[in-house]
Length: 102
Picture 1 (tube, helix red, strand yellow):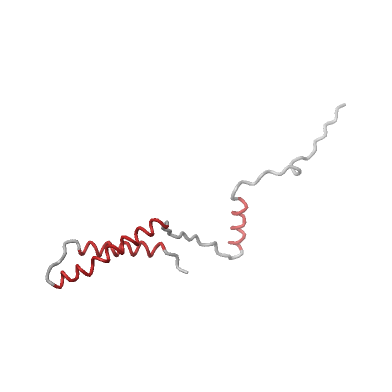
Picture 2 (cartoon, rainbow, N blue to C red):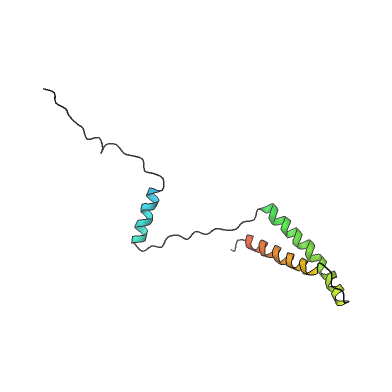
């Protein structure tokens, strides 16, 4: 007579949890408790070299505006005056979006 003994190994072994499972369970627990999920905020960042280059371009273009305004006062509209103003606006908006409010 042969007796077989089966040892319950399922409780002794632990299986690794898939990545993110613990976070998902935590999020469910928080949702049930009425805690709102964290809001994802993506900060637009401009790297330092691009930031400096755009600031230099902005300064260079802005320096030409007083001479253009003098021409306008004399009745002559410089051909690229409007484009310069648009470029100044574009650069300033882009630089402004790259600065983190403190």
